[in-house]
Image (cartoon, helix red, strand yellow):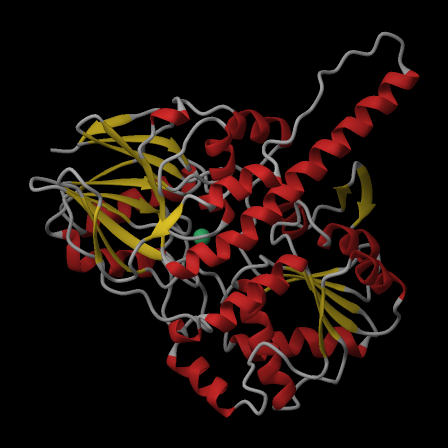
Length: 469
Ligand SMILES: [Zn+2]
């Protein structure tokens, strides 16, 4: 077998790796690359292979940096099966349609800008911008989804098997091993953590010869800064006391449901004042329904909360309103007084949260609460780094709001957790390929892994290929 690295190399987005088995090509993930607009467009648009030659795709989980370029793969000729667990399939149904809608809107915006420039600049030339993919492409993609067992084995034909274990990173997420009679290639997907709200802990990884491994927090330790509930309560209480709004940019999938669950607990315990709480994201509304459907995947604590909840719904309570309609979203701008708004996207790159940030960020009473990883060059990273002014919709805005961060909800294992995750399989590994991490994290993690275990660690670049025999 051979492994080819096409995405999430020395960066955290655009997960896409290829395993060649004989003359068959299997893609592990097909994620969207996120970053500077022009670079992202070029990277996502152009596959370094002909999509029609790919035989099948196996998805580790539904996050858009792992699944979000599938409709483009289909648009450009792929028509094989896309294997994903049942929960991942349902999440993809919401997420890929939403992503297609955003792509269409993005293209419309660029076309309007082009037309404006054409009107004021003589002989202005700019090519027509097409969406990366459309909702029609997304619908065709969803028709190709097929089962992948959670914690089981599946035959991929011609002597190739896929085995999976629960990755504990988000609902439906798996780590996997592809194997024939000679070689076992592992793919970690994104590695979760113990004790995260809602989802179960990661299961022990299966033995393999070669491992493609994520390294998002390869150089960091998550600090144990007290209970996440205490921290969240403090932020809500101090912002409400000064009459401010709390804007929480959040991944619609996973992070939003965790926050809702925690806020539900704080409200029940009367630890925060009774302020209105909004989840302003049509995608989050749909995805929360999927979470409700897969309560069989909940961890023991959430299952207990569910059994004790009077309405049998841990994602709903009286002060909480889910907002689907765009007019209702705009109406939030005119509401006064303390409130908490959870809205996508998590790195503040798109979606309704950008409007809420524009409205809230210049006011010192308000708080921007970041709850997830902020990649380089994203608006979220600029806010996290407390730039005095940040660009929003092409204009600069003074950042006067408080910036708070909760790290405890990170769905990614930290350095120590990654090392422990490796322990049961490290003795049998011939090589580890680090992906899904920024170069600095990967360099540090390589040193720690090689000092801990007797295994070679490689940090591949895009386009690198290795024989796995
Ligand atoms: Zn992920």
